[in-house]
Structure formats: structure tokens, C-alpha cells
Length: 324
Image (tube, rainbow, N blue to C red; front, side, top):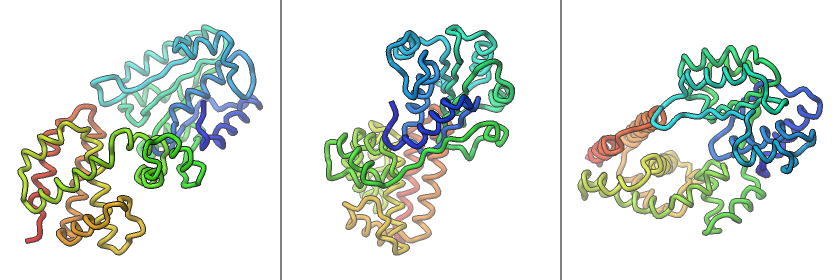
């Protein structure tokens, strides 16, 4: 299965496949929420299918094995639970498997998700396979942070770029899959036009949580509530989502302060955003955004974080940012 906005990229893959000039390594890049992993799995299914057509047949033995998740020539590497990176042992395990003959007599396919999470040792071990794959092998590297990948990795792959767009087809696609149809356009904007992220935001109750955070943030900045109580309440929610919502709120406040109201994302709470704009000076707002960026970097670089400490640090800082 591919998504409607992936047709251009799929046509490129099919062209490679039909002309028998498929690169040995593909780098699938683009923002979160564009379905890159699903696309990689669809490519794997096509390549492993016994019938050389433009779509996997779904009925041959290879397709059946694929759909059951037991295809012996498909390898998927991801960050293991409780780890913050892809380890060298995982790469060596895959390399050992690729050194053996394909069990189904066709191509071997490796999907490496979160490729940016490879540590240095894993990257060095993977480079040899990337440079000199043994036998018919397709390596697919999936990332939403291509800029952090070493040039030695990027230069050895054919890049397939996925981009978000704001066209009506994407809007209709999202609208058909959410409860509040009237929120489709705003959800897409909040997700930077990544459809799957837009749907995820609604599933995570973005709007009710945001409305709650607007009150908590204002009460914290104006020192009308206890930081301990606020953090205790927020610990029930997903920390990354909280940080994302708070960032969108303060970015919107900044947009108002620099006279760019047309770029505000939380358009349905304009009046309270204006109140924040009056309460916070530009310098204090920039200090808040810098702190949010620092905390966000901690959450994405570590697989396990102390949410309570991070939120306490943030809200204690917010408590000191009221107008003096």
C-alpha cells in the first residue's frame, strides 16, 4: 500500500524496477507523518514478489510470507527498546545474514528505520555493506533528519524525497479520516502538512490538551498556580506532545509580536494568544523558545527521560518570565 501523495516516488521505484536498474541503496527522506516506512515496506513487498509486475501480486508464496511478517529475506532494523541508538551488534547481525544466500532465491531487502540513530560504531560497520553489498541486496534507509547523517552515508544512496503539500486532495484525505471535519485544515497546518501527523494529533486530543495548557501556562507566568501542581497534572500526558503544543503556542505568540498573524497555527484561540503577547516581552519569549528547543533536543536524543524534571525545569523558568 502506498498513500496518494507518494505516487510520484512510487513511479520512480517502478521505473527502476522495470528497467532492472534498481539502486542497491535508497535513502527515504522527508518530515514525519508522510508514511516513509509504509512506503519502504511496499517497495520490499514489490521486490520480493515472485511476479515481476508494477504491484505485488499478494497471492504468491513470497507475498504470503511478507504479509505474515515471516519473509526470510526481509530484515528490519530499528532502535531496540530501552536503547537510544542503533547498536553495532544489530548491524553485524544483518551483515552476517546478508553474507548468506537468499533463502527464497531472489533479492534480500533491509529496511533501516531511524537511520540517524546509528551510533558511530554501527555507522562504520554499516558503511562496508553500503559500499560493497554482497549479491542482490536492496538497502532502504528511512529518516526524517537527513541533515544529521554522515556524508559518507548520504553519498552512497539514491535519495527518494517525500514532501508535504497543502493541496485539496490531501485535505480531503485527512478530512475523511478524522472526527471533527472542520478541524482538518488546521490540523494539517499544525502538522506542517504531514497527513499522518495531522490524524495523530487528533487521536492524541490535541485541541483539549492545548486549551488546558493555555490556561496552565498563563497561570504559571502570572504566578497564579503552583508549578508542582501543574507538573503533577501534566505527567499523565505524553511529554513530547506537551512540549510540541507549548512550542506551537509560543511560536504563535512570536508571530503576533512580529506582525505575522497570517502564519498563526492556533487560529481558534487568537484572543488568548494576544494576551500572552502583552504579558511577555520579546526577549523573554525568545528565552522561553530557546529553553523549549534545549529540552526538545534532550527528549529526541535519549530513549528514556525524566519527564518530571524536564517539565519542572520548564515551568519554573516560565514562572520567572512575567512582566516585571
